[in-house]
Length: 275
Image (cartoon, rainbow, N blue to C red; front, side, top):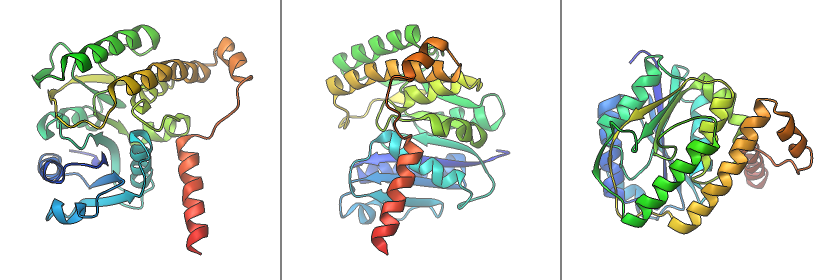
């Protein structure tokens, strides 16, 4: 690889054995500069149960559940801030359950490392994807329906928006970071929509994917939140394209802080309390 890679693994109450094995596999296959595991609400024995980890792995913990989007944003901000390695040119994230095996995840990262894309999106629904084990019937149908709707609602046309395997250049991250607001699973949708609006080159990469039991995602609740995110993500993307209708609509809404602004505010509060 010609550019150093920083990987973020967002994790909420992860299975320690599965996570530990995945961290070793990621390190062996990709040789990243750092793998930063952003753990929300960890169990007290997590570090002990993970066992010995590669030297490049670091754990960052939060006492409460922040959400996937917030966790990834916090990790990317830490890695892109040059405090870990000035050589990092590519940021990537992979779900902690290892649904995308390290070998397949590497193909997503390679698309960015080799300069073929500014943002590479792993895809379980691409015609060339290799799905080793499927979700339950209900989850699969809801996922297919959402992907169908997203293709017709967003300007970026993909088979799959939600696969937990994505990579982007540090430069692309610096462009999109202040335009991301979704704290949870809808973050992926917003990332793709915003990157498209900012004219980033987006590549969809078919992956091998293995469904993992024990998901912490509420099927119905998450689907409703994702549907709402489609509306807001399209709105924010159209604002970036200076669409007059959406600019007029935005003038009537209350501005909210972006994820990076919220993280900065939390860090400031923590620093004040520490003093």
